[in-house]
Image 1 (cartoon, rainbow, N blue to C red):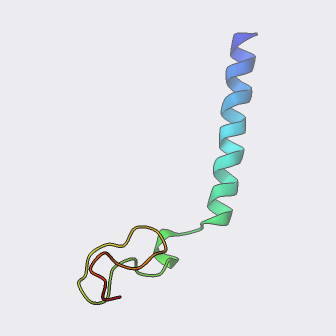
Image 2: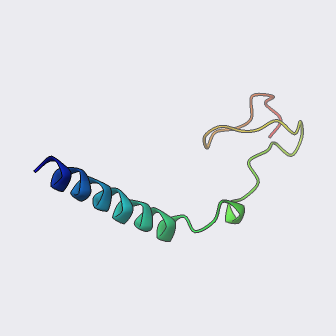
Length: 53
């Protein structure tokens, strides 16, 4: 019974991973997440911490 539960859990994780690949096929398709002025990485959707962009 324990092996059956573990197997079902792993299958569920596999299915969720496949849906994640369909939704986000590649990280390289995302737009650049750096500030165009200072070059620092931006976190979230708000403006850069430098206040320029």
